[in-house]
Amino acid sequence: MNYKDIITIKLDKRGGKPCIRGLRITVYDVLEYLASGMIAEEILEEFDYLNAEDIQACLSYAADRERHQLIVNA
Image (tube, rainbow, N blue to C red):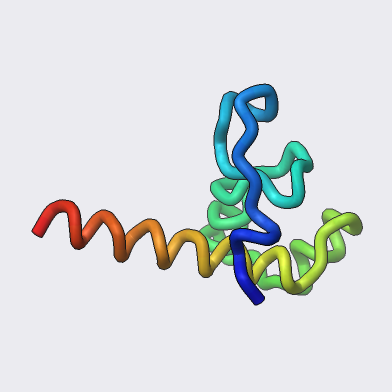
């Protein structure tokens, strides 16, 4: 799975924030739910248009972004 096939960035959606498959739910939204203690299954129940691969893509995107931040700031 390549997150670049799932995470989209469009200026007309949520102010250019990274979203899942062009939908209005952002990577940040999913990460915030996970950080608040929700498990993936709960997120999938709450948002029936998401799938497990979408959540994995959010995590991969965040990890890649963090890795790039560390390289830039080194």
